[in-house]
Amino acid sequence: MENFRNFCIIAHIDHGKSTLADRLLEHTETISNRDMQAQALDDMDIERERGITIKSHAIQMDYTHTDGKDYTINLIDTPGHVDFSYEVSRSIAACEGALLIVDATQGIQAQTISNLYLAIEHDLEIIPVINKIDMDSAMIEEVKDQIIDLVGGKREEIVLASGKTGQGIDEIMEAIISRVPSPKGNVTEPLQALIFDSTFNAYRGVIAYFRIMNGKLNKGDQVRFMNTGNEYVADEVGILKMENVAKKSIGAGNVGYIITGIKESKEIKVGDTITLAKNPCVEAIQGFEDVKPMVFAGIFPIDNDDYEDLRDSLEKLQLNDASLVYEPETSIALGFGFRCGFLGMLHLEIIQERLWREFGMSIITTVPNVSYRAYLKKGDKELIINNPQDLPDIMLMDRVEEPYIVAQIISKPEYVGSIMSLCIEKRGEIKNQVYLTESRVELTFHLPLAEIVFDFYDRLKSISRGYASFDYEITDYRKSDLVKMDIKLNGDNVDAFSSLIHRDKAQAFGRRICKKLRELLPRQQFQIAIQAAIGAKVIARETISALRKDVTAKCYGGDITRKRKLLEKQKAGKKKMRQIGSVEVPQKAFLDVLKLD
Image (cartoon, rainbow, N blue to C red; front, side, top):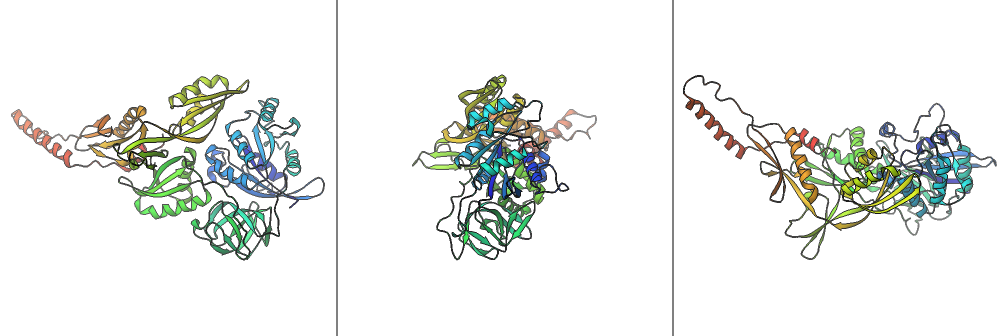
């Protein structure tokens, strides 16, 4: 174990983690030049196309140091986007050290600080690395000052590197060997291994990735998963290279995988402890906190016959992405589907895309919202409201509370005014403003989570020309003037379009939806009234006029009363049709209204 090193790479999005990981793999000859490609560890097409890391990726490297010793180094490359911070927290739990990458052209940004605090909480050794030093706009000395203000330490301990040219890779490897502590643990004690990730293979079943804290795991051992209490035989154990490499045994301090032939994804839980059935450990490792979804949306199959396939797809996806939460729900308009919880809007978008690409599922996603708390007048009972339909009657309700976040925005001083205007428009309150350097200012806001789930991040990037970085965490729930807004078609509620919204914003939002529905709904033989209403009060209305058939076409010449008679007959028919005719909402209209714009 003296010669083991386990570390992860943490940084803000787009600071060059995956490129630097590529250079480390090349340097240690873990991957041949023939197989080398950009973002080598990112194995999903969607990661390559967008240039972002979505999943943490673990890989083992063998390295011979200048002192002649051979070292085994386990590297975990992590995502940088705030929506995938759960992946980062799980990776940090399996490591002793972390490379903190900072872009020389952009300096420290919001997610850099957030990920750094996560690593410090787990008592990891931090190695600061300034990346992209080959760029013309690199501000090396300024970024060094920022790092020392944030992390402390000495200037000479900061490693200068370039993921593009490979400069500084030797210094990084030297720092990992000399500064990251070797794993603690005892091979002779009972087996204790923490599951930090898992994936599903159609032929082998569930593959669990673990880090052994104590003991030793051999192929053929009878193992027990402590969370479920189930026992299995270890059909295969091994280490994680570019391809999984089977081994006879793996000891304490190492990272590896286990295949037990489990086919049901619910039998395995990320954060669980693996031990031996014959000689179990006394207590489970403290895993990770259960993930708290921030944004909720309904996912429904376009064809109701695909409901079971969608369930299987979500189950397999949850194995690969432990932060996805779902439960069954039904909608009058959309049939059977699932209420899913996501960590943010990008997470929702990625899940949608993966369901289509990996499982061929055609789905409808409803308007995303957040989780509210409603309190009843009787007994002050608390209800969790994930869906507008769950909201109790206004006469029975005492108050509704919505989640608030504390948001950190780091930007250039010239954009402060625009950022403040945006946050105030989103019902935010400024709490703090700190100049980190002359050209960087940190703004702290309290904002309702519901206001940032739609277009906040995109608008922030637009007004700051891409310079602002954003990070947030949930703080508490506060009383709010929330109302349930229903959309009515000829007086009938369409539950899929209902939404919970702040009273001040309801009218503008209602008008927008009515206008959009007017464009999308096909004209009928009768007039259609589209209304947005809060309780019995209508706050917005649009009307689709009826299709008119020219019933007087056959009348030519003669008395006007002949035409009038036919028109009166048509008028009576339309009135009757409107009373008994139901408005069919085509699937495309649902898709377009509920699209995330």
